[in-house]
Image (tube, rainbow, N blue to C red; front, side):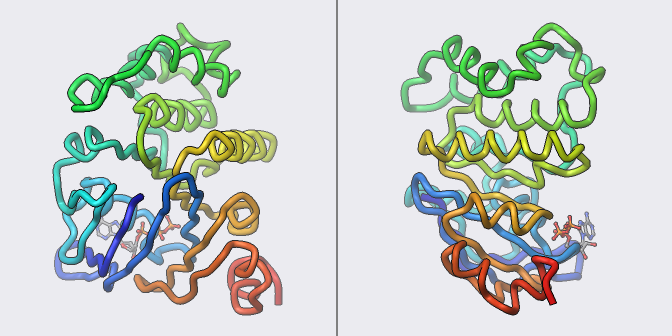
Length: 239
Ligand code: ATP
């Protein structure tokens, strides 16, 4: 389980996260929604070590990982699929996926069957399967986004942070991404999902948190957030 308590983060002197707390229980899909600039990406970066938190704690299965280096956090079993298309452009799809598994070699627990997991990841992402030998830099934006997600899966992590996996995708691909998220969930993968499509995120999630200006304003089971008039008015396009 991933647990964040009173997390604070700043860029220079500007504090962006003012002490947020959230839990992602094992096997659950938790979503973090909020307006542009609320601090969702900053939260993900502060969890995964890309940004050093100014205060608070982050624990993974009871182990304190607050402010540790990203590679150590990956080794501890936390995968971050970042916003945007962060793939290794001059490497093939398959090599990008294998790199995702690299931290498993330096982990204390058994590394598992990487070849089997590669096949499984390619089954999960048929678009990538068709393009295994293609250089990642020549994939479409949507395909690169999927590759970033598939690479996170290849870590065989305890928790996956998914930052706006649907960003910039055509509607048909957005649907595909949400289907993949549902499938990962049904396989028991623990995930924290940041999404611009709040309604779609609440439909697949077990639990949700609303981030407003760096503070959690509401949280609860996804089903009850979907019917919360304030959430509907602000994030689900209702009035
Ligand atoms: P969006 O949905 O638009 O991606 P977000 O909720 O993910 O928004 P963040 O990207 O976390 O928001 O940004 C939170 C605030 O921090 C914003 O005001 C943003 O301008 C600021 N910010 C983000 N990255 C930096 C940075 N590298 N340096 C300075 N300020 C930053």
